[in-house]
Amino acid sequence: MTEQKATNITWHHSTITSQDREELLKQKGCVIWFTGLSGSGKSTLALEVESALHQNGHLTYVLDGDNIRHGLNKNLGFSPADREENIRRIGEVAKLFADAGVITMTAFISPYRGDRDKARDLLGEGRFIEVFVDCALDVCEERDPKGLYKLARAGEIKEFTGISAPYEAPANPEVVVNTGEQTLEESTQEVIAFLEQNGLIR
Image (cartoon, rainbow, N blue to C red; front, side):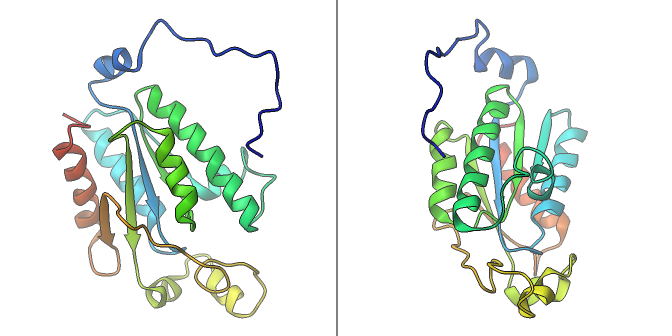
C-alpha cells in the first residue's frame, strides 16, 4: 500500500518552518510512541502524560489505537498486512502533527519492530521517542479491561497479540516503564523527565 499511485503532484513548501511553529509554541514537535501488549496501560499512560504536559502549557494530542480504527483506519483488520498499514498511516499522520509543533503521542500495540522502525525513520533525529510500556502477560491478562484475552484464549479472536500473534519488544527504546510495578504517576514522570532532559520541553 506504499506504492505512489497519484501522478502529476508536487510538494508545496510552506513559508512557515517547523522551527517557526516551535518557537511560537515554546516546545519541540515530536512523537512519543507508546508500545506494549493489550492491557499494559499504553492509553492510560499516554493520556496522563498529555494531561501533565497540558497543565504546564504544552500543546499535545493523543492518537489512540481504538480511536483511529473508528475513522482513518476503519477499513483495516488485524492481519499482519493490515497491522503494517495501520502503523504506516499512523506514522505519517504523527509526522504531520510533529511538523506542526505538536507533542504527539501514539498508543498502539504496534507489535512489529520493523513497523515501529519505519515510523522512527520518518522523524528527524531525536524526534521519535519510543516508550516501551513493559508489563507481564499474566498481569495484562488479569487486568483484561476489554475481555479480549478471555476471548482470545477461547479461540474467538484470531491473531491476538501475545496469545496467537507475536509481540516484538523494542530493542533500544528511549524510555522503559514497567506498569506492573510502577504507579501511573511514576511512569508519567519518567516520560516527562526524558522530554525535559532532551530539550523537547522547557
